[in-house]
Length: 281
Length: 156
Image 1 (cartoon, rainbow over the protein chains, first blue to last red):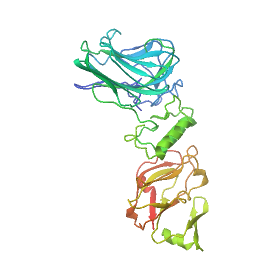
Image 2 (image 1 turned 135 degrees about the horizontal axis):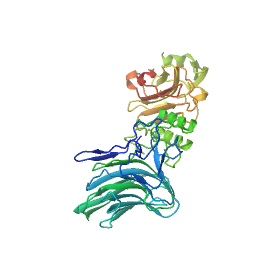
Image 3 (image 1 turned 60 degrees about the horizontal axis):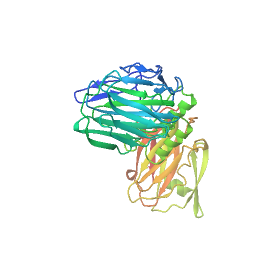
């Protein structure tokens, strides 16, 4: 699975590419943790999964949850001064009202020098703001799981921002004069103590290349939806989460894994839409 | 096995009844009389300890399925539940067959799972091919290895 890689977060930096694939590697019998976020965490963020605290996840066996009305986040200090970042994560919207600041980039590692900000409101709308210029883009999302992918770039008149929620065609603003100090860190969580719990999963970031959504309804994580996915999902249900699916079982993205997800996956199969690359969902 | 011979062997008046030893004893397949321009394709499960199987039958352009009523006639009632289907996609020349027993994983006995009757005069194995075979064993685990040999076609 790809998910917020809470215990084996990989930060791969190459000359042109920063890959923060928060991929959970050996997940079996492993406690979920946020310890590998190298910038630390604050505010009682909780890592867990179906067999660890019963925390809903989108993919794999771990995810992260922030408590209601608390300033809680994890921080990544890997960017190291870059002028562009693409990031994708899944957020489970449990806001009871208002809006939460869920992702922010900084020009320092101390939580100062805001460069960009992502807001989520209780209705599911997601907004990306370039803080230097105040330019923003917005897209509608869900009140349960939504995928959020942003692309933020600095430039002296050629900066831009881009936002895609749930795989929609990106909303973009280009020609921004937002040059300045580079991106040193990012924080993910509930950064403004909004009311309601939030879940996060499948965080990944890069320098330039698109990340995209995970395959929806692929519990066995093999890239194809078939009867084995039905079986793997059912096994998770039958064991009350004791044998969690390694892939993406929450096919209807409602925040819980159950029988309706079996029907959604069977719907993909019945429509000859088993191939995740052709039909990511 | 010559499917047409089997079918013709049971002709009574204008209809024909075929008794096929399948999953749970003898089952009756009632079909209209089979014309010489019709090809009958049988899906044969060729492996033991299989609890579920999914595959696509790709057939040539120009062929059309005339009768699917026997597509799942060879499977036991235990497998005729929510996650079992036989569905034709004529625009793609694909017949999708999904047979499962999610949650129970009871065995499908090897043998004929069902039939599809094509209107045109296709009668060669090479006119048809099986793709994307996925099978589960009686532990509910995915069967690895040469999945293409799990289901065989018999064309007449």
